[in-house]
Each structure stands twice: as structure tokens, then as C-alpha cells.
Length: 220
Image (cartoon, rainbow, N blue to C red; front, side, top):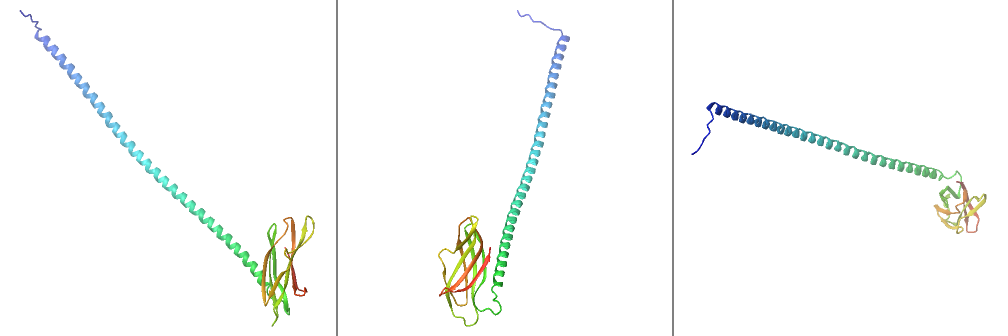
């Protein structure tokens, strides 16, 4: 024998209605929750896209700024090189001008004195080359027509002070041989003590018999 319990129909309808309402409410909650999730995902994607655009913009601006900085640095280097080159050229021009002035003075002194004949010393110059050397230049000339060849010697002598005392210093090695037809240019370096103060340089030319034929002194 089976015993079954039967609910009245009104109660069954009420229970069914409650279950249906609960299911509907659950479905509505799930739908709204799904909508919220979908909305968050869309917002996140949109924000991510915006961030990517912003990053790309910043990267482009950085590359542009870096390019400008590189160009400016290159221009500065080029300008610096140009300035150094101009300074070097200016220094070279100044040196050439000094050389031309010296040559001009040298050749001006080559002109012989009116009425002077025989052997003479022209354009004698001297200056300190270093603390222990003095450099000299001179031009020897035979003035006059049909002058015979001159054979003799020349000697350079320095004078000044050494350790506070008067000092005279002949060229090391003694007089040098000399042979002139019309003109001869002489130049050289005279070594001397470092503590010497050179004030004058003298060149003296003698013939074979030792007679002085020409002499000239220049101050330093």
C-alpha cells in the first residue's frame, strides 16, 4: 500500500509562483551582473587604447626632442670646429705678416749707401732663440764695379752681462772662412750660458792678412 500526500491546488500554485519569481529574480541579477562586467571590460579596453595612444604620442615627442638635441649638438660641434679653424688661420696670417715685415726691413737695409764701395755688412739682425741660444742674420755685399772675389773670415761676438758682471763671448769655434763674389747671406745660432744676458751682437769681417774690412753691431 502506498500513502501519498496531496497539497491543495491553491498551495501548489503559490509554491510554483514563488519558485518562478525566485528564478526570474536570479536571472535578472545574473543579467545585470553580466552587463556590469561587460561594461567594465569595455571601459578598460577604451582606457587601454587611450593610454596606448598617449604613450605613442609621448614617444613621438621624445624622438622629436632627441632629434632636435642631436641636430643642435652637431651644429655646436661644427661651429666650434669652424671657430678653431678661423683662429688657426688668423694666427697663421699674423705670423706671415710678422715675417713679411721682417723681410721688408731686411731688404730695406740692403740698399747700399750713396758713394759707398767695397765690402759691407747689411741687414744685421739678432734675437734670442731660446734661453741658451741667440740667432743672427746678416748680408755681406761687395759694392762697386769689377770688385775682385773676397776671401777672408768672419767672427760673431756677443756681449752683455753674466752673473751681474760684464761679459764678452766670442763665437765658439773661432772665426769662420768666408768667400764672396757679390753677396753672401749669413745666419746661424750662437750657444751661450743660460744665465747670460745678451745685449749686443757684433759681426767682424777680416781679410787674409787679418785686417778688419767690415764690422757692424746690433742691439738685442
